[in-house]
Length: 539
Image (cartoon, rainbow, N blue to C red; front, side, top):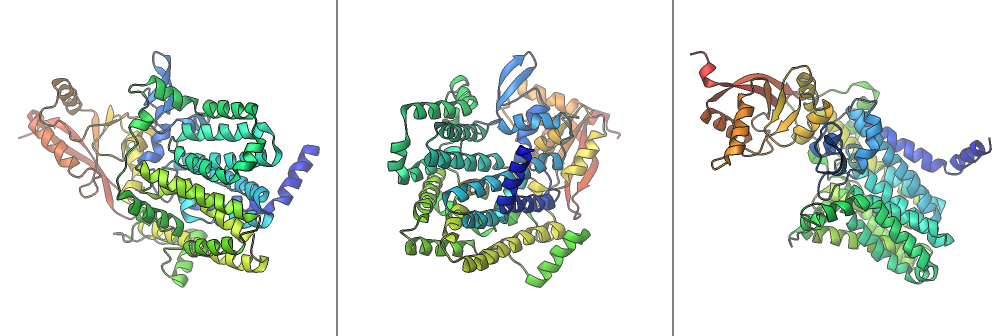
């Protein structure tokens, strides 16, 4: 009973955190089924249904423990989902609801962080802004970055670090370092944020030096290395060594301008409007209370593609100058320095050109604004907070309206669902994939039955090694194989269909079309076919 009473007391004292987290979770549920599964969103689950993985530890002749999916992308999310997919089918809900829950947990931790750094007023403002942030919501729900674990681990690391700074307890410092290590394993480009947070922490250098002990530093280093151990093992054991750095470090001067545009699109909420269409052969009509409310709101407010967060950040800078001697100064400066250094590190390494990169700087901009809100009169702050939150929600509603009315873009197409369902009912020996953006989704949605087999682009090019050409001919000769293509005009690799068709004809095979698959708005996105020997064709 004592534990229950303590839990109820905690919830009562922090009802705002719980309310914001629940609100965020409900918003995420609204968007879960609006798009298809994107290829990068599915990659984490592929090793659960294949014997192959990018890099793993051998556990037997046909079993490997996945550690890495790419040179910079770890398998932490795969480990977390393994028990879930042991009992549930890999549906969009099973894939996305846990990601939304991670986002809701991040909001609760963010409240606790701001409450310790500044005040409950700052915690309330920050949690409201984060819960209504359009890009934070969508990138977390669809988590193709991935970003959900990055945000959770970043905020947890910041919270533990603050707890250590305030109490001097070395266990909190080790916990912060371990969260950073896990974040490195989840996605090695956490180094961007890590560099930013380390630079921002220099503002507190005097206090850190007083609190730091040799034992505490040793524990923190051990915890950091322990959390990052899988990515360390990969870089030391795989060939070539240090592949994470070698394959991902590049720089182009033009990245700065493009990166700044991506950051602004992340601030103002417009950065993902491209995943929703602006027209459709068959415009969707609202079904249910939520969609009808969305259409009524859109009719009343019109197109709403950006919020007012950029203006709020400018005002936040003025608050920092006017309240220079306040307790919020160091926290606001930390956010500015950490964000700036994180962005520079991102751009110098060739990232930051898309919102699924720039959103990794979150929640630093919201952290900056929340501390600014804590320094203004409560009534003024509440009015401004309501205005900013409403502008966020109007942008979010723009996405919902477009998804319902016009559907999602080719990379996010919901036509993947009828395609997967149809293939699962066949007795195909394999689903041969001719283009990017199909294979991983089909592998996950159908538990790799039939096996998804992507082929190289270009298929059977002149000068192909004899062994590879022989393997490709065996695929063409497999009469039980079903080939899956994007419809002309929807290809990611332009000309992929023609290259396959020409290569097949030169090898003596002809296509037999099977079916076409449409998205919910009537666009033909996928087609399936078989190849048969031309000698078997009726004359």
